[in-house]
Image 1: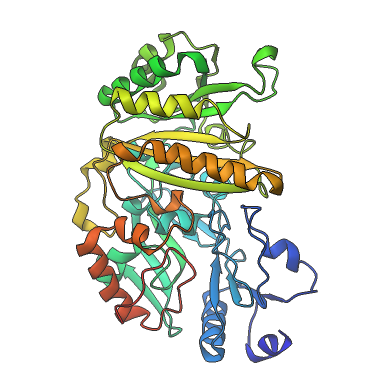
Image 2 (image 1 turned 180 degrees about the vertical axis):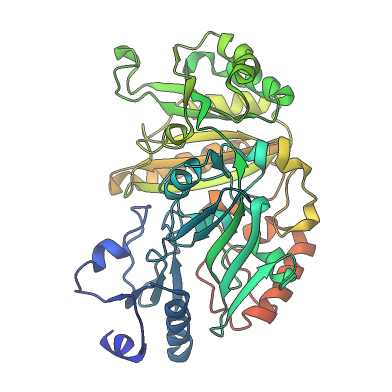
Amino acid sequence: MSDLKETIGAFSGVLMAVGDEGYDEARSVFNGMIDRRPALIARCASPTDVAAAVKLATDTGTPLSVYGGGHGVTGAAVVDGGLCVDLRGLKGITVDASAKTARVEAGCTWGEVDAATQEHALAVTGGRVSTTGVAGLALGSGSGWLERSFGFVCDNLIAAEVVTADGRAVRASGDENPELFWGLRGGGGNFGIVTAFHLQLHDLGPIVLGGMLLYPAAVGPELVRFYRDFMEKAPDEVGTGLAFICAPPEDFVPEPVRGQPVIGVIVCCSGPVEAAEEALRPLREFGPPAVDMVAPMPYLAVQQLLDPPNPHGMRNYWTADFYDELPDDAVDALVAKATQPVSPMTQIILVPGGGAIARVDDEVMAFGQRHSKWNIHYLSMWPDPSDDERNIAYTRELSGALKPWAAGGVYLNFIGDEGSERVKSAFGPEKFARLQALKDEWDPTNVFRHNQNIPPSS
């Protein structure tokens, strides 16, 4: 470990090995099931530092991981005995309000980006939990509340500054290294380390119509059917998701319901508040909801709604599938199981497709699968290691019960380590072959492999 520190040479950031101050905090990730000990954590302060860390890993044959936000459920940000290229020292955000663009360095979180862009009443689709890192979300495509209005994060990527496996600093855009740019938009961190993202922004807020509706679990079958049909015709400005959760122990929740299974509908509308009120009226009148917390509020507040139920360090097991349709039989199978969670922290989230994300040509970038009507994220969370087996089994049983209706393919940011075939299914055979050819060109020895990996063809 000390040899790695000495070998890296000129490095302006912070180097941490086992026993160093800050090492244990630096190696922790969102998923508490992950407990890995890198030989060296290199917290970079510049792209030059990133290049030095990559060179050290390749010269010494040391496994390399990349830490952006550490939010991915696989814990790929850290690798046992390896070198962690820690981007959390790269925190620059520059907003050009007149051009409606932003340059965002790779160590930023979505909460930091939202705060910077909202100073100018601008925004881009961002993570649903504010502590999510920009880099992993953007490279994996980038789903968020605004996607039906503005597309995924990758749809709004204008250019990327990249450190390659051989230590070069290059730029990828529609004009510069366009094939690399194609692959970065959905292909994950397989081709290099992106140190800065250039993003297109959109007019938004600072006040939007947002919040949450809570319904009793007993109305689940009727509610999900209504929500399914409502979203078929909803305008693009209606950003939303339906979640099977347990009611929080908060004052706004009737005491008998606290801790009990309920169904929440999260709302974030990008258009004028008056138009959004009218668009949401049928949904707010259905039932009606037991609790209606939808109101004009800052977009920043909407982006923090899911922070409390998603704390750092809980044990997490995730999976997901796309669905072209949700017929009544699928709804019944989902509701029967999703309203009986093993852990009160578990969240099963239905994310509707359509809108802007469905209007992008599948061939424009690596990420496709834009025409599925639903993306269901099975997210189990619990605190006690002794409950691992029960929670994992529950998640597998629930997602398995819906497999007959799954469309094939998967949104990689929503799953754990499920093997190479699941990675391939996210792209299909033609795109996967194109991505492998890109890997052959930019990372032929698979330096960047601690991820949802696209290996070289060899």
